[in-house]
Structures are given as structure tokens and as C-alpha cells.
Image (cartoon, rainbow, N blue to C red; front, side, top):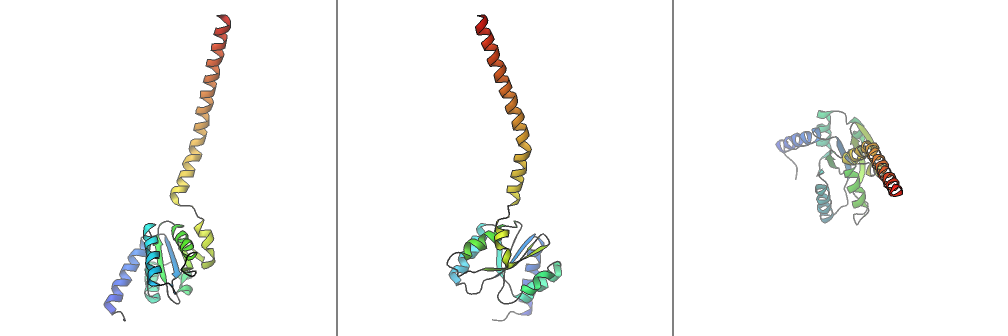
Amino acid sequence: MALTKEQKGVILDEVTKELEGVSTVYLTNCSGLTVEHMNTLRTKFRASNIQYRVVKNTLLRLAMDRIGGFQEMYSTLEGPTAVAYCNDPAAPARVIKEFSAGPGNGRPALKAAYIDGAVYDGQSIDILASLRSKQEIIGDIAGLLLAPMTNVVGALQAQGGNLVGALQTMAEREG
């Protein structure tokens, strides 16, 4: 069923608004997925806090034009396209990689990914899936910052223990 002009306008506004609020956009080819597989895939995306929807290429391109910066992805807007977007650069790649290894016959296939202004082609799925999340990086930095303090405290405690041990030994000798 063809969409009316009003329906297209509503979808265009929705997609534009959704794309403006994220730093990560993945374009996928989901052709060949059964309805059951597609529902399972959407559930996995939702569980990872990722929005996923099938959008007409023309409407998606118009939304991208409104925002700007997506020109390198236009060549991938052919055939069936579904878009995944969020603020975690690796989360969509992990879901896509895990799901496409299952019974979905290699789908969805990554067409392109836009992450903070950089565009990656469909062959980059393994690299993108191995990216660490912002929280993981912050945790690593916090650990690195705390490591010197932990070493200092450990050294002071060890020295204090050695001092107490030496005093006890001296007291035993005199006693």
C-alpha cells in the first residue's frame, strides 16, 4: 500500500528527529528475513537500547539531507534498507554480528555505519563490533588513575607492617 503525502511527511519528520539525537547510525540490508526473524531482531535491538526501523530510501535520504553529513552513505541507499541508531557505536554491530551468525541466512547485512562523523563500509562489522563502549573506556581510565594511588597505599601499608615487625623483633630480643 502506497503512503500518502501526509504519511510520508510524518515519517520524514520522525526519522529526522530520531537521527538528530544520535551519534551512531547503521544502515542494514534485511531482505530475506522472515517476519519471525525480523521480530526477534527488533527485540534484540530494543534490549540493547537501539532503535531499529525499516525506512524507504527516499525518505531516509531526505532526513539525512536535512541533518547533513551523511553524503558518503547515499550510495548504499539501494534495495531494502533498515536503519539502526543509538549513541553506543559498537552496540548495533554486536547485535548485527550475533544475529547474522544465526538462522537469518547472513542477514541483516551491514551496508554502512556512521559514527561521530566517520563513515564505515559494510566490511567493517568485525572492527565495529570490537569497539568498546563509553562506559568501558571510562572504567579503564578510572582504573588507570586509581592504580598509582593503590600502589602508594599498598607500599605504605607494607612499610608500616615491616616497621611493626621490626619493633616487635627488637622488643623480643630485649625482653
